[in-house]
Image (cartoon, helix red, strand yellow):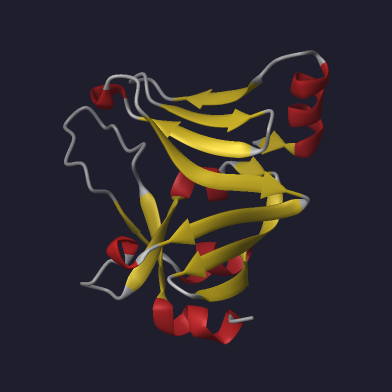
Length: 140
């Protein structure tokens, strides 16, 4: 698990960030400037911006198009939440409202979905979806 102590050592040694790769060439990238990105090998180098981590908080924005209509929920990268100990809280802006939800709550009550039907076991796009109804309890 990537912890703050390990990540700080990486940054202190002059690296520009920390990369969590998988066996298929995909990368979860934690940049020195606190931004978090995701590179999917099949997207030929394009990096998706997931948000930023500052002072135990992961900040992100979800627009209307990011709401999963079938379950009325929003998704987060499962590996970022599960495989790192860099933050405890998720601050998310959904359209024009702001929420502060504990990461552990999303892990406990969220539902995992993988949008790739990959025979090679590639689950790097695995997302955990948290219900908008549950999120309402954490509105600021």
